[in-house]
Every structure is written in C-alpha cells, then in structure tokens.
Image (cartoon, rainbow, N blue to C red; front, side):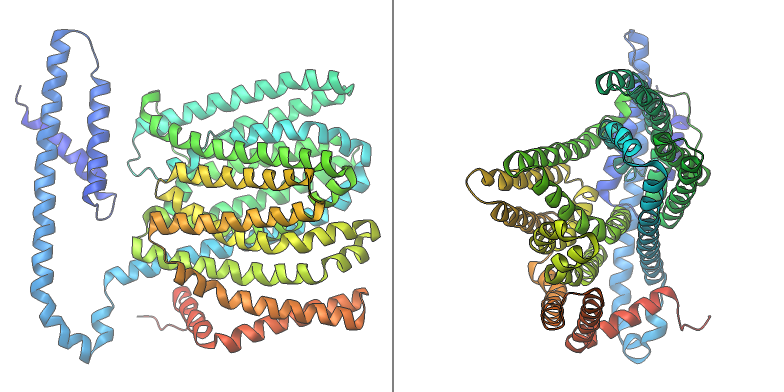
Length: 592
C-alpha cells in the first residue's frame, strides 16, 4: 500500500508535536518518534493476516513521514548553523560599538521571562508557606482548647494509617507526568482513570479499616472519623493531573494560591465545627475539606476532559518512574518510624519525646523555604537549558544557605534557653538535642535542592538510593545507642544528614555537571557569617542571662550581625544580585 495522504497526515501530527517542544533536540525528536511508533502499533494490534499487513503498511507510512520530518529538521539546523557562522564576523564590530541594541534579542527575553517566572514561583511559594505556618500555629491552641486531649487522642489513632495511604495515593506519577511534553490522550486519559480507580479504592480501604480500628481501640467514633477521612482520597487523586499541568507550565503561583485558600478555608471550617461540638470529627472534616477545595481550585485552573481511553501500556514508563519515587517516600517513612521506635526502646519515652520535638522544629522551619524552592527548581528543570539551569541551581543553594544557616546558628546557640523559658524546664533536653541536630538539617535542606535536578534528569534510581540510604543511615546512627549514649546517637544522626548532603552534591555533579568549588563558594559566606552571628548570640545570653527579653535581644542582634557581616564580606555579589532581581522583576526599567 502506498498512501501519500496518510503519510502527510502523520507528518502534520508529528510536526505539531515537535513544534510544542520549542526547538527540539535530536534526542527529544527520537522520543516523540518512538512514542508514535508504539501508539500506532498498539492501536492496530490484531492476529489476522490482513490486519497485520495493514498495520505493517501503516507503520511504513509512519516511517516515511518520520524520514521526511527528520530530513527537513536537519537541513534547517544546517542552514541555521551556516548563517550564524557567516554572520559572526559582521556582528563583532556592532557588539563593540553598540552592545545594547545587538544584545536585546528574542532569546534573552525568553530567558528573562523564565527567570521572572522562577522568582515569582519561589516568592509565592515561600510567602504561602510562611502564612500556612502562621495559620497552623494560631489554629493549634484554638483547637486544643475546643477539643481537649481526649478528642485529639482519638483523631491521632486514625492519622498514621491515613497519612501513609495519602503518601502513596498518586503512585508518584504526578512528578513524572509533569515532564511529559507530548500531551498524548492515551497517556493523560489513562493516567486519569488509573488515578480515579486508585482514589476510590483507597477510600474503600480506609472506610473498611475504620471498623477494625474502632473495634481494636474500643472507640466507636473512629468509624465515622475514618469514613469522613476516606472521602478525601478521590479528590486527592483528582488534583494530581492539574497539578502536573501547572508544574509543566511553570505556573506554581496559582498552585501556591490554591494551597493557601485551601488551608485558610479548611481551618475556618475546623474551628467552626469544633465550636459547634463536633470534637475529633472537626479535624477529620478539615482534612477532607482541604482535599475537596484543592481539587476544585486546581481543576478550575488546569482541567482537561479525559477521553474514554484506557491503555495501561501507555503509562508504563510513568508508573515505573513514579514507583521509584513512591518507593523512596515509603522507604523514608518506614525508616523514620523505625528510627523513632528504636530510639524510644533504647532511651525511653521521655527522651524520645524530646528527640522528636528537636527533629520537628528545624524541619518545620526549613521546609517553609525548601519546599517552594524545590518545586520551583523542579518546574524550571523540566524546560530550562542546561547552562542556565546550573546557574539557577547555584543561586537556589545560595538562597537556602542564606536563610537556613543563620537559623541553625541561632538554634545551636540558644535553643535550650528558649525552650526552657517558653515551654518549661522539662523541654531543656529537647533544646540540647536541637543544638546538635540544627546544623545538619540546614546543610541537608540546602543539598536536597539537588534531588529536583535528579528527578528532572530522570536519575530516579539515584534519587531513590540517596533518599532511602540517608534514612537507613539515620537508623544505624540511632542503633549505635545500644553501646553509646543518646547524645552520641544524636550526633551521629547529624553526621548522617551531613553525609546525605555530600552524596547529594556528588550526585548533582555526576548527572548535571555541577562543580564542587562553585557550590562551596555559594554557601561559604553564609556559613562563616552564621558562625560569627551564632557566637555573638551565645555570648550575649551568657553575659545578660537567659530571660525572655535577653533572649529576644540576643536573637535580634545576631540577625543584624549576620546581615551586616554578609554585606561587608560579599557586598559586590549582593548588590549584583539585588540588581539582577530588580531587572528580572522589571523594576526601574523604562517601557519600550
């Protein structure tokens, strides 16, 4: 069969797909061609001789279209290369005499647009994270007053099981789909139906588990609580695809706003229901309402109606990639649970409580900046050019060091005094643990930005190995408590966090070509300034005492000292970055 019309149709479809890639590379084109071959072969799968001949003829027409497109693309690339070589000598004198008109081309404008988008994503994400922290801090005492310890205890029985299922609900395919540029109906429609089946199945599992949990705990109220919690799972999975589309487009500002609105409204609902006497059920409603609102907002922003297509083979790659990501999450969760269980068995419940509290404080503080920075870097990594991406990665590491290192220094200097004054003497041990843990968390939070690069570059197995390996190292550090003291075990946990940072930096060097020297230069200034400001904070407390006014003065002085030292030691780079941020934001620029 020779069907020129079919060949032209294939060429038009493939050409449209390649045009969406905005200057596709040969590797990207080969991936599109491979996907096209697999899709056509699957759609024409049959056992009859006539159908097999038709399939072979159709595939032959597809190969003709691919050869035509590849010939045209290669010829165009060759022509562009010759034109750039012939024009290069003529451009030299223009650059010297009048640099501004020559350099204001379309490409830099697109780079600037991407940079502005990245900065907006980080800014919006960080702002929303801080607002969420404020809401949660305000909500906790209010709900504690309205509910009391017993109702909180009943809800706590349901949380671990539901939180675990929520971790694995999307199968990890959301981040993988964010990298998919084909927008093929077979992929996205199949993913939609798979996610919906997953959400409904998990809802049934949670509902059934409620009966067993209520019976085991002798708390009949748990059945209703688990029923309400189960209703959130279909909405959780329904938000995965629009979230992936927003990430793929780099629009994390809308994502952050949806997150903020969700947290605010669900918090108001929880307080209202708690005031009306719903008890622990108000917390369950807060959880479910949050997922419902989030799904509604995200789908209003990036919903695409799925087709009646269900081809699991079309998303095999995404399921495989997502499975590795999910394995990393589950492995980390299991190892952290084992870490706490082992620490409690070795050192007792009271010491475990102090250790848990000391772990939660730096994670709570640092993740307010690391989570939005990570998301923005991942979204940027999907479409950014390699050279520009590395520059952004270095800047993100610098930013994370700038905000986490001084916080860790202050925690190391005065955390026992602060916790003793605010929470009472029984929490001093948590402050002592926090002194040891804070520096390791600051460095590991900075290094964790590299995991966004690994996932974007499809280094999924390395991501899994580093993540799970770090969690296993923490368990091994705690296990040293069989022969060593709790203090040394905590110090070894910090060593495990530092080891994670070193391995992560090495992985980014291997897969993305990052330079150790450049990474060190980006974080060195913050490290030195943080050490000095932390020392100043410590000396003030020792001289003036550990009263609340003295602690507030010491922390404020340390903050001023840190900013002053950073400015004096790195004035040129700081002024350059401020100017860069102004240009990226369009501040002070005249309209054309």
